[in-house]
Image 1 (tube, rainbow, N blue to C red):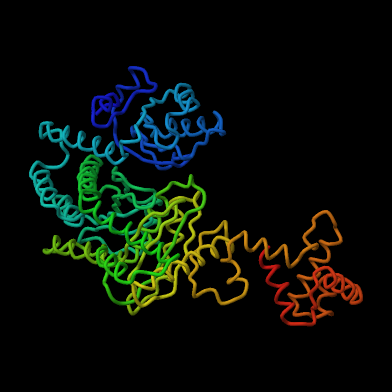
Image 2: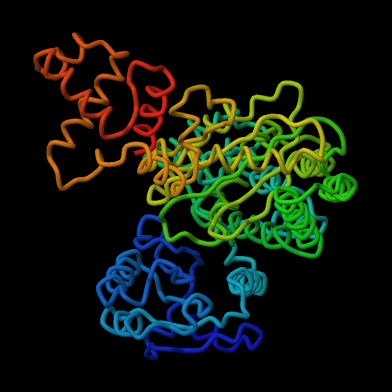
Amino acid sequence: MHVDHLLTIEALGITLVWGDEHLMSREIAGVTATDLEDPTRFLEPGEIVLSGLVWWRPDDGRARADRFVAALRAGGAVALLAGEETHGAVPGELVDACRAHRVALLSVPARTSFRAVTEAVYLRQWGDLSRRPAPHHALPENVRGQLSRLLELGVGPAELLESAFAHLGTPACHLLTSSGRTVARTSSAPALPAPEAARRLHGASGTTLRVQADATAYDAWHLHLGEQDAAPPRVLHEIAEVLAQHRHRHGGGDVARERARAHDALIALIALADTAAPDADALAEAVRSCGLPGEGAYRVVVAAPEGGGRHPDAGRDLLAEALRHLRAAAASAPVSASATSATSALSTEASAYFALAPRPGGEAVAVVHAGADDELPERLREVWPLLHACRPDAVPHAGVSARVTGPAELGRALVQARYALAGARNTAPGAARVTAVDDLSTLEALLAGVPDDVRAAYRSSTLGPLLKESKASYGMLLETLEVFLGNNGSWARTAKALHLHVNTVHYRIQRVEALTGRDLSRLDHKLDLRAALFCR
């Protein structure tokens, strides 16, 4: 399939913005969807790049567009397909950059999803392969026929993987996500813990090939063989195309859309219960509609990545992959005679484990069914660094509620989870962090979740003149107060820490008391000032 073939697919509505005959005749090897400003390390030569342009703002000028297009050229991309939804049209600066770097530029209308474009490319490629004479295929004809039948039957990736490699003696092969989750593995492949799998994906040993399907930075699929020569490169590419076909067929459709609508309805109902009296019956019905058990304990998780373009679905993609990791042990089981039923059982278990929907601002909310051995916060913390490594430019934070015992309490759990999320952001804004409401065991941790404007108001009303930056003496008083309270009100230890005479410390604390109206001999007044310092 060539770049100019995209213009002939009327259903997509793609139009040419810039590109000469030579560029438009280049062959498409695959598709990558990205909104990273520098996607070089995720590109393979010959790919077209789909971008919603959320990395670009009107006041950025030409420089940022130049860097992005230069990265595409360096990565071997054959064309850029720019979505119109974010900015309403393709920015002129991007057109100039594509012309300067000689990268074909096409426009994707807002009505056309990137999934539709990706499916069109791979369906066309698979059709082209199917029409070629048998000698052009690396996979034997009987294997290709068997894989086509399995695709039609709707079997899972584990059985597809086993059948695809059987004629090669079933070498050890893993199908992994970018964050190290095992989607499937051949019967000869050992189970891999997620950290080890992620390390292998980025290591120099073995062979890794990305499955070119509509996916995110967190859950893109990769074929990984531990031995370099376990399979010919063309065989791997054809197997990857089969797996891409499988993902296209099962990643969408009426069932997936209906599930997404049920999840959206549940999360919206929980958010409403946060501000009004909850409708217990409606919540219980919404929980059951999502496939979650109607009884038992639940937790609510709220997650959002900071930076990285703030794609509206970034939180959903992040949290969905994190929660799927918690079911990775079942997903990585080798294929057996009952592979199809095992795959179905796994899907049922996953759907009965959590319901998740995106919210405005890139945030995502999930309701998780908590079992008796619930260790959700600890297990999320284990996979969180793996997810951050997939998108280092987007720092992920999450808040986890306490366990609640029924659907009617989910509104309260949502409040807790959002409070814990705010605490994670304020405590470690530049570090990936999962904070559970159960972790709020100190005054500092408790105050970290208070909204920023409330913290600022309390800080200002309590510390008053000590915050005036124009007076250096007030800065010294603030430092003395902080050291004094940190040393439990000890005059001697404060004087030693600040290299001052004890009388000077007494004088400064008296000034603090006069300016703030607090008496530092009283415990409650000490706590007032300590809390205000934590709110800075």
